[in-house]
Length: 199
Image (cartoon, rainbow, N blue to C red; front, side, top):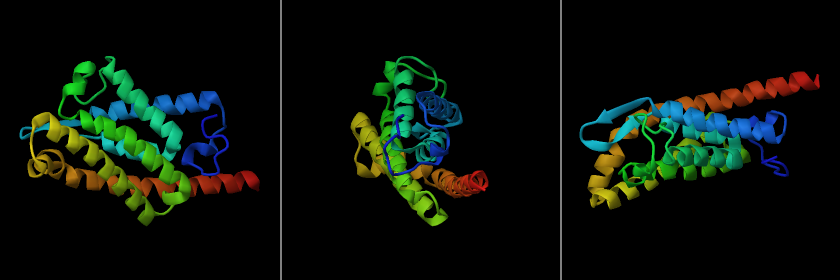
């Protein structure tokens, strides 16, 4: 089992430990990112669309933990690059690696890993700490995304911010707050289920 031997715990560790459970969770996470990618709003002034992916990546990464979350986002990006049309706008294929927004996909993998690790340490149990967790994840995604965009388009920092960060701050704030409410709520439900089983 992918989380076996770890003292840290993710939300989904309540489920029975087995290879089948791991594979199902990894697959469902990748599919969820692909579905949320289709919530896509192109913007005329930037090659990066508004999507629902960051919500799926951060929420799923925290719920699944380091290993499952990382593998799920890797599966999403890998299958998209070999042709599964589940990137934003129902696109896929190796051509995406030359797209200015490709850095955000790499950021999804890094953010899933870091958010998953931090969530296992208990940072997703309370709303305040979960907000911090989501901010860290967003910063990672923005960092990779903006850096690749700047290199790809040959632009400086100010234009990189204008094209790759500023247009998405408000929407990501809403997604961040929604995820920050859902995770502690899910932990509360999990705690009640565990208590009921022990009773």
